[in-house]
Length: 86
Image (cartoon, rainbow, N blue to C red; front, side):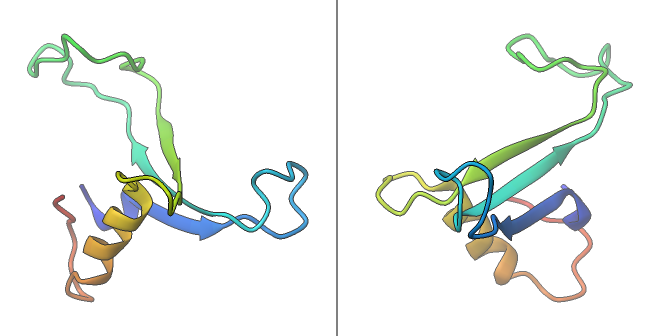
């Protein structure tokens, strides 16, 4: 995925939803796909023609923490990297 499609940040401490206040978040931008007939999307549950952001929260107690995993790989990429593979 291009590096510009990987975003991360932190919810402000005064966020309107108290459960999200101060939590780290990450997201992957999923652009609309105009090649639906050329790739296999049989098990895809997302709408194919609508752009969206797939979000995840940092959850230190979870054994599988996508935020920690993706931040680790993104932080260890070369500063001039154009694409991110994980």
